[in-house]
Image (cartoon, rainbow, N blue to C red; front, side, top):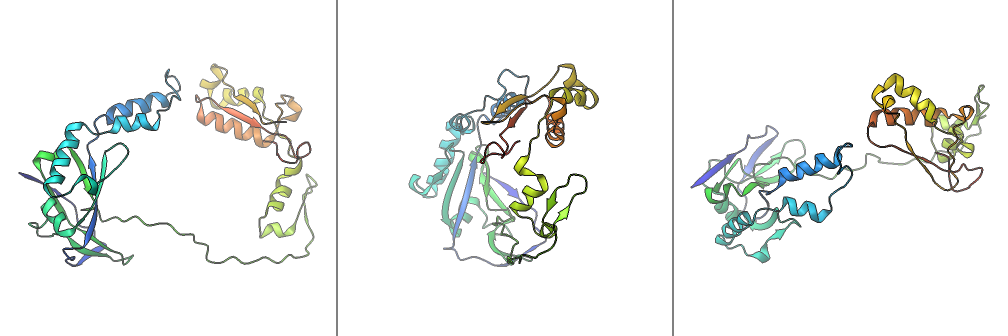
Length: 295
């Protein structure tokens, strides 16, 4: 007994012709994963800040063990493939064994998936917008004996395609230096090259943000004031952050040295992420270390 799986026909494609029977088709077979629900339980546990297993991420091998198909499913699918002359050497398997990859002629695909008896068997389809050609069918069937062991077989009824995205930059024009007077900020007295109005360079960023002498600290008392107003649940438990000094980094709590940028960033970042544990990293300024910038 066969059970059919049917797909709706996309409006952006149209069938051109029948493919050659010898045309090779790459199929991916998804075998039913045996403990996917258990994997979900692990995910919730390690993502919950209040759970005792919070942050105890699973190793790759542990995940593969959880999603590996049941031996009965593997046996059933192997027997089905073998009945069509497909041997172990012809099969590519994922590390967990839940995905199989085979390359077979279209003629064999139609026999395996019983597409030949459908009105719309395997055709060559053309995408109207991209002009891409693909071999697809609008319906396929599986023997009932493997129906509970196979999640899906694609690409069969999937008309979507996977394409690499390309850069939209087509040309790069060199900007010639121009002798314009620098821009002077009347409040800070900071000078920025006029060219920064049209082109951003590393030099521009250093001038705009005063990176060479960027001393900026965050303040725990100020964070608590912010929490009291914006995140009361964090204020109740006196939530704060861990401090990590990258060689030379300081953790000044002097109210006169509160930094506008770092304070703003930590308040909103730590407020949004509460109750997840937060860490603030501080590095030396360029004035004391040529290889580091504060914050």
